[in-house]
Length: 354
Ligand SMILES: [Fe+2]
Ligand SMILES: [Fe+2]
Image (cartoon, rainbow, N blue to C red; front, side, top):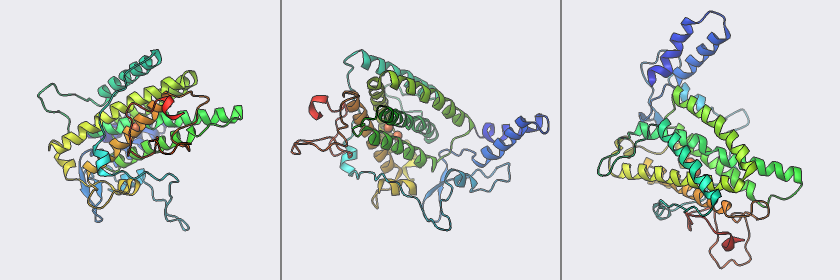
């Protein structure tokens, strides 16, 4: 993959006529891709003991060794500003809560669920193909290395941030044009999109994708965004159920990774620390900042998305308030929350919360 991402554009540049836009495009890509030559799974620690991606010393361009990280994470410091902060604070998870997360499946109950499940299965197949995921047959070990898992994670997280934004955007626009309240859905949906983007940025701190993966992400986003946009206009309920089923798959993926780290099958990750961006975002406590811990946090987030989307899929899309931002009359009963202290993997039923 390295030779394709970094060297091929250089060769292509010399073969193109001088002064053409295409040549300039390929040349600029060449410098870009070389500086971001993938080193998935290859990491080292810097002076602050933070994991950084190990640069390939056979770099063929004059790009400075650390330029890749700078491009992905440009410093926000200016004369006046030290750092930017998010308005969304991530809820605190305990280790016990995260370890209690289980793989679960919500059974289909109507035609809308069938459509959602079928679409989720199609996407899962596409993702398996794109990331060359192979599930082991009974009694055999996973053939997936850190690099394979990372490819899958990056692809998964790059598309996972789309539905919340599409749904939030469409509900926002509907509220504007109908001049009616949204009843608290938009905030939860946008926060989910933000959370998924933080997953992506966290893993990008560990490994950056090559050209093939970036093209896959580009194509997938184009298809996925437009598909979801149209689908959400037709049936938002089916879309939330579909995302619920996708999140079930995400929980499965992260559970497999956690099991693989625990079984000693991913030795590089077993001794790696979580990047600083993750420590800050999840407020990871001292002594619980390993890659294994990071996977527990991400899986817990995915389990929350699973619950939220299955719950939203159970509601009247136009009339019902969002139970995750609601203040309930009867506070003595268990209620939906942002944390994972109480999880309902198949979602809260409408009668329980409305
Ligand atoms: Fe995610
Ligand atoms: Fe998710």
